[in-house]
Length: 64
Image (cartoon, rainbow, N blue to C red; front, side, top):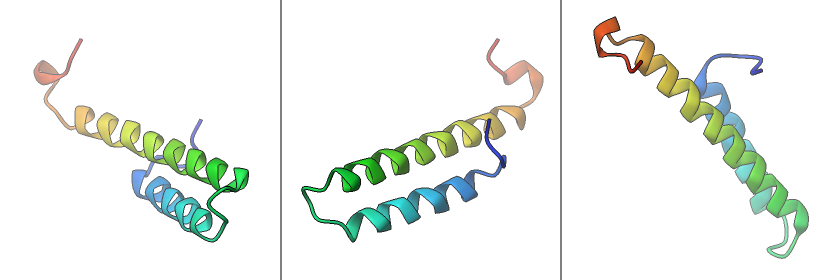
């Protein structure tokens, strides 16, 4: 469960993990893991943004 429901927080976290990855050697396992964490935060932000978009639609426009 996210500790915040604001997608921008997770976008910032993803950026921080991507920045961390750039400081590591290209062949570093830790660099790969930082990239995976960043993608996870981006995915969570996508879900939260979609949820917000759907909740702002009139009920008749929402998918079942």
